[in-house]
Length: 436
Image 1 (tube, rainbow, N blue to C red):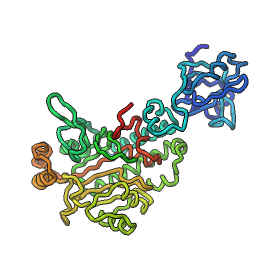
Image 2: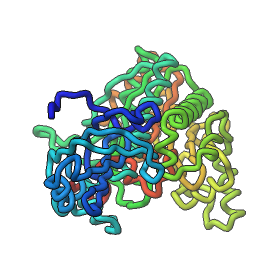
Image 3: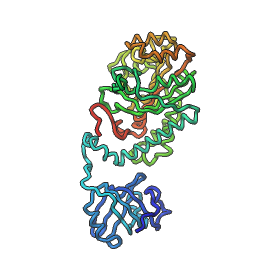
Image 4: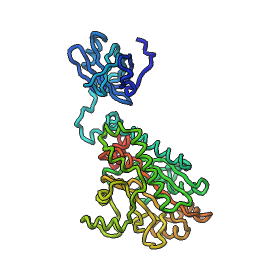
């Protein structure tokens, strides 16, 4: 057969308009069985799954015999007539008149029922699973929608460095890297560099990898993750919170419009997601959050940081994302501006996703006064010399400004309704996991 033909994506041919027509698809064997002289092969490609019936009367005994012994994930090509078949996935099947094995597969090591560590060790193969495939499509839409929001609203995309000389969020969670004859670090955040860029571009954003050497191994922590960050001159905390909620609402709406099928395959409740597309989102202060937690019987005092367990309790009080603001300065970073009405508090905010997912965005108004920033750096035990260039920004035309960082994988985890953040990234990196 002449293989220089027009190939179809499976998703495209699952339609009445193709019934009775010859179609040609290529992909990988997802399931297969052989009964008598017929092989029933479910073939998947990047768009979907379709059943192909390979009859020895049309295609020959050799290919049916081959399909009886072949393993899952063999790559194949086939052509045949598309017919309606209610019992087949998608309601259609191809009755093949030609079928070819391109790449053989024997003893595919994932058969179902394996443990998490085994699946992580074989991530390079498990990535082909339906769950991860559909999740990666949702993630694609999340990234596209985020970029779309910033472009449509007049923000400039920039490219800050990944290698840095100093910490952003604290030295204890830095990954050191040998940098010629010096020690550098993998970036925890692009924030400081974005702040430098607002003095020329005013409103900037970036999408980069960030690295945190946290010892925790929870369902929402990664050592390497994708970080969507924004910084803007002349914006106060409330201005930036509006950007954050508009961005999240836009992304959720985009995914609902473009990934309904993927969400349904993952079992996500679409009606719940629809509650999240209309900002503004509720706002509470840290004081109120502590009161709620104490009334719920949580052992927490004013001044304590909010961890995953505390955030999970708080999310059960809201049916949409919500902000927590005005945290004690001791539990927030040196760069956050203090509340002029109460300097025990920082003008910081976290945006928490409901349904137990917790923080997806952290942001703040930044300290724009040189002396106050210098004092905060010293208070938190950092060396001012490491931040000389950052302090310079407050010496030459300083302006009020604010920013935030959004964890892409946490957002995907919430939107897709995943149980663990490891499934929101192709090859997860966390404590004890660097292979493959």
